[in-house]
Image (cartoon, rainbow over all chains, first blue to last red; front, side):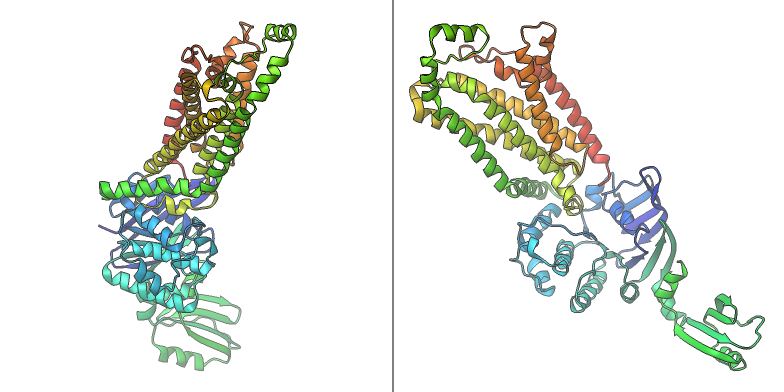
Length: 288
Length: 271
């Protein structure tokens, strides 16, 4: 059984606005799945559907085998959630708020002190007095304090300083080792590439690609861009992908024999040349 | 699965939250309505003196015109004069309380946390309804205590318990019906303000005033069945429990149907 199972979900708002359509992915226990896409692409709709806040029009959407809407209370039982928009009961202290959320989850309070210390969160402050970064920390602590089997985080690192971000990713690694399934939505592609096992790219409500992060590391894919004065009719070389030609400018990804490529390039009258590692940024931009 | 003890704990914490969040507002409403009732009762000796000073022929003309000014005791006086503050003031307060309970989480986006935990939507909504019913009961009991204390100070010999209890009972029924009605209406809406919560009780109150003023007209008499305020005005000190219960029955049916539909709608809607 998958921790999270999403199959061909569709959600249309007000009979015409596409929230999501054709979104399918599964997340295993002990896996971190990155979810990327520009604003309005459908990330939050998918996440809110997982949390039972939005009902999908069709498709299957389960957490731990339970339908997220029909059996929402059972599906959410072992889920820690960090929403993108944060709002707390302002008159409550941090400690009282975490306790309230844990009571709603049916959990005890044993991890509160440990997590608040780890994320440097003052438990006695009123939630209404917190900065954006501290609000994020509070939401993260609430999500982690219930010892979840599934973590769903929408823009969890926005507003966090680099030190706390580092601590956050270390904590995610620990949770992953414990077997927690993690869905991490973010605009920060570097952090997705750093900590995720797989990544889903969503565009206009459609999940256009799911990539193993390992692919980027193992294929040693290079992004090549050059301009030449030579009259080059075509390039025939094994390992060239996604070739784009714009006048004298050539752009492609390359995972073939680098010596052959260098030989070919040295025979040309080059104006400029750039060779960089292909990363998630390039993959992401390819779709836009 | 969350066990029963854990679920009870979750529901209790949610139940307590609602009172804590509206603590200041509740205290202010209680102070204002309580103070108005005390002022009303404190004016009894003065009003009694003024009525006594009206010449008999003028007084007879006034009663012939349908204006009922006579009161034999502080209870009689309070039942005639205090009912508006108690019933309408309470209705406005309680309906605003309902609206706040149901809209605050969506307006402030706290719903993202509240509705993404282990309690089902039905559990949450029934807990909020329990809050509202408790608040309705607390309001009526507190105001009864305030009335009794004020009457004891002004004229303890004039206290007649059964009409006061009857009036409290009718107010309680009226308020329960109104809060259920408003609760049901707000289940259909997420982000509305207090407008409906203020407009509905006012509308029904004025309808009862119109129904009373045209009570001689047989055709217009049906208006009294359209508002749950009318039984309060039907009541007399001699036979406090002898009132027309039909408006209550009509509103029990309306509120019951609406709340069933509202809960069903709320369980399915997008947040």
